[in-house]
Length: 305
Picture 1 (tube, rainbow, N blue to C red):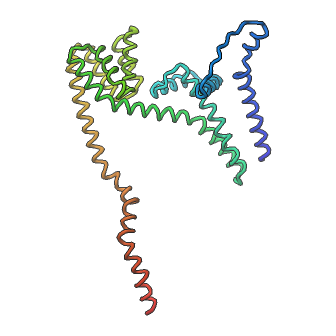
Picture 2 (cartoon, rainbow, N blue to C red):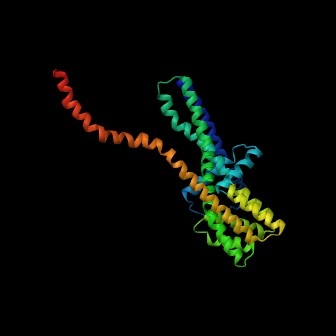
Picture 3 (cartoon, rainbow, N blue to C red):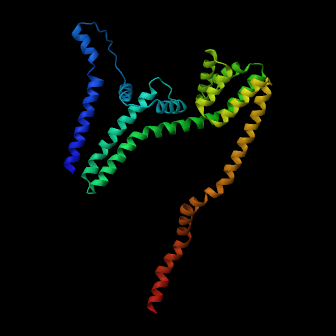
């Protein structure tokens, strides 16, 4: 069984590396141009190893067949995570393909050399393939969650600055540009989102569409509420400054309520750390000397009676 598994893994890896060599490194177009006498101008450039690795992942991703529905979903997740390059989706699929190969390779030696059952070895190899294939998805999800947290943290400051800008006489579009410029160092995530919204407005999109795209890109509930308020103010012609001021007060009250809720939950969350970490050391300090005295003095007295 071990010999058969080794032969199967060897044949699979041989086929994969042969396909990669033909599609990535053989470059049949360059060979045809060289045979036909075509002039090929190449510039010698020293690429960084990380760039070469990214290029390899992109080429691997182009080999993975995907459905259009899955492509749309993953593209949306990448945008929310901040990966908005033209080759981000191919790089992700290349990382999934490489992980599905490298993780089983790293675990094949210990698994084959172990004394477990053959069925458990097969299950372990399939689990390694699944872990290597789905790990990039989990990384993208974590990065998207982290970016949404940063946007949520910087939104109150952005809203206060927007209120000051609008009340000082700037329009909403100019206020958004000013907020993106002032918060580029303190909160780069929300500054980038407002900058993209400004570019969409310059490209000719309506303000309502640009605001909805802003809410869709970030998928942050507080930002969606702000977008809904701005759309309603633009649609009904109400004062933008008064609307922003009222929404800023609402967000400030909401932030205070969230802080009070976390403070109320703190006592319940501290029960388990106190019980498992503090009480054992407290028992050792208080009861330990008395237990030593009992073992050294009282027990010999009892045994002597």
